[in-house]
Image (cartoon, rainbow, N blue to C red):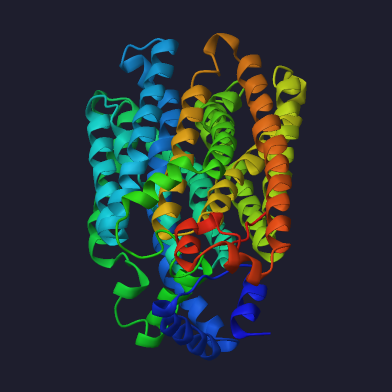
Length: 497
């Protein structure tokens, strides 16, 4: 077995190389022999301790700032702004529309300018909007925040292999579930300022968090790491080169469409035409319906169990802590066994059961403990899904530009799901919320259980057909240039399932 064939068998990734790329591939094989065993583990620990904490922290702040809309509602935000329940839901809808519109353009900017320039600017804009929201009212948060999730998602693919991606992704995304607990605790503390200087507590929540986020964003402009090729002395020259070449070859080959680091419109258009993006976009849409609607109404659901507003804030924290543990377990399982479909379907099933129990028990005061357990199950299952889908689409798109745009495309649809989710939990239907829970169950069952199983089956058929073709047959049918241009459509490419 040749070195190339051995590499393809070990990684599950087929590589297309031409004469110009042969030298780079030979260099990669040489470095891969150096970076193995303890040396590779040491390099991975470097990345885990330096890259991940930064992304976790800035995403935690971004997500906490966004999720505080549910906490603000408990502290008279809706009343102060003179909004009806319908107008409140419409305001949430504006957030998701602007979020959906901004995501692809943000990732295009990130691909051109790099994470170090783009992500801190996004966070800084978010902080300014928060401060403005605390002083008046503002609906442009979604436009600025839209780049944070897809930007951080794409950044991780620059540092980690497909086999490492989901577990690291879930560590980073655990910031979102921790943000739910963090924002609830912070809102509980800041809420005690309710009435100070004649202002309700929700204004202090936004202003104080906005000022803190501003400080962090300004610091991130100087300390946030860029791509492996552009970092400082904490990586040696060999380590930098190894990470760059590993990223090229393990995500479809150095010559796969869009694999270079330059901005590429053709690869961006390919992402919009990829059927994989739209299959998983529907799954992400379903996730958006369930997750966003549920997260916005969670403190209110707990309030309706008979607790005070302050206690409802505190009791919304444990479900998010449980969700953080579930997210980490899901990522470990997905990378350990390379089972992307099961990593999606199992949490979806847990969330389905939790929501079903909640809808059956939430109106019965004698069943409050059971309802609260259901809330924990639903939260734990739901928060596993966004990283599952984002990682799955990242792994099934060859080339950096196409991968970045595909993540952004699917997230656009998730925000449209949030647009639906923010309007289905109607105040007039409290505390049972039959429409909200019912639609969430429907989309979870179809989009997050049935569709992933069908997608898994189709990928198996495609991979089996490609396995049946020998290298000789492939090179008789296609030229090297054609295989390079095909990217993940190449018969040498294998999809993750």
